[in-house]
Image (cartoon, rainbow, N blue to C red; front, top):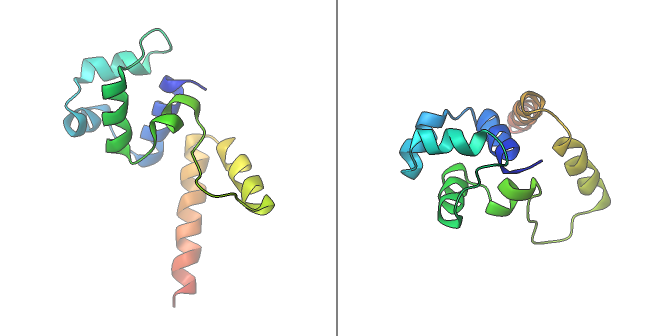
Length: 108
């Protein structure tokens, strides 16, 4: 997936509207719409950094879909991450919500 698809996935996952991202980044809604329209319009490095920072992700993730991980993951974690990355934005959100629900139950 390219920048447009990864940005759309992240916006959907975080339930962030383009107008909201525009306010957070100072990038016009029209420009953001162009970035989301496909590979023909790519953001400048400065705008890619602003978008990544506003969403709390890396520029590498937006560009490639792969998160930069500082340390080596176990085989189990690699498999989980690989499977998670194949999910739709809706299913990623569902998994995230389920994990949060399970984690909150364990605290009790």
